[in-house]
Length: 138
Image 1 (cartoon, rainbow, N blue to C red):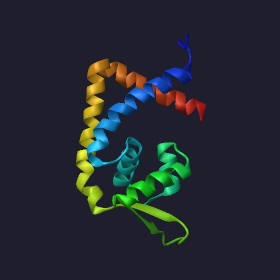
Image 2 (image 1 turned 60 degrees about the vertical axis):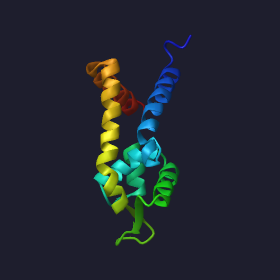
Image 3 (image 1 turned 30 degrees about the horizontal axis):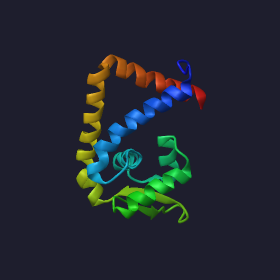
């Protein structure tokens, strides 16, 4: 019935993939969305909330909620910028730095597991096509 429905099929895929990443990040007490945001902060300390939202293709209020959760867990801190005290830059804490490698490893393990299940070439093609569709629809 929904063989040609982009919404249904991408949403179904998202639910399946979300379960995998939820399991991977559960030991750290964070959601997949928080984990991916934290990975960006760890790799690019000092980005603004707006820049983080843009990088992850999420709304600014969503980024704010994710950051609030990470800040409550003492994994990120917001600092006012020198240029404008009304704007905040986001930095990882030492607690975040301590789990950086483990979070990357957990994510890599999920990627490898899915690649083994569907084949690396299929995985790479699927990711490339999804990214292409996202770019075209923006």
